[in-house]
Image (cartoon, rainbow, N blue to C red):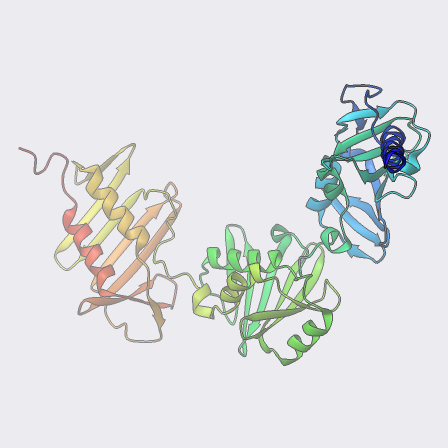
Length: 439
């Protein structure tokens, strides 16, 4: 029994001795070489001309700066890069701070996973000098990783999240926009949907419908369409075979051409049930549109010509008019704006009642457009704004509780519902002199 006990004790001592040797030689020593937290490296993002991400078991990815804030992937293929993703990587290195210095003069990097690193990041500056950052194994506690810079003898530990911040896949670094252009650079949009062609041209203060013929335009709706088109992204998670099959069987929704400072780009959009697919001139292949974009993009592309037309009778925006003239039968009202006051026939008017009228005029909006029915006006309204530079004249013909309206020099007929006409007549009736009604 004593012999067996001695054998067992010897085995335990041998195991403990092995663990002690491994802990002292394989990982962080009990007393680190330094307890400060210096920068592993400091990167000026603006000075970087190219970078390469080499993850173990994956093809290296090389990115080249193509302009201020613009990057392009040059390997393993030629693709536009997601500038925000690259900027995020570089920001993590400006600076990359160590948790601790493990060894000021490390000689055996293999035991820390740094000879064949999990991730290697090569940064080449505009001065053609390259810095190589190595990220190795996790530390025994699992909350940090070993790191080193080629040419620097020090061995560091860094926060674990650094690895995920820098170890980006090809799909994470690619620009996944189907039309990778800036909305502000677009000068015209050509939209074809359901056999109808609509053309928009950018003008000084918004957009103008040019096709099928010139119409006053709802700039907000066109801006929204452009925003949805330039922000739509492809879904990297859908297998290529499924995308090809889906695109082939889907029904055409619309084809759009954007013309801008960088040339022309086209996007063909199709739909199958709730899924949208696209083919872009800017990104080779067919793609399933990311689900986060489909609802808003689908709604924008489903708009008809009338949805893009301006239904407001007056283009006041958020500014106050300088003058309002209203004539209907025996009722005539002329209001002028001077400083903070409103006047009519030499009388100072109650500002709140006139502001209510101005708001009502600003909100006069048609429910639809019609082709005929206007014969003789029953109401004439003239609104002067922009310091007298802009004069808008509108005639209305009441038909029961509703009305038809037309603007001067515009053949469009606007149909207004009963609620809109009621709000107008109530606002006119509510205009009063300053102090009127007070006791």
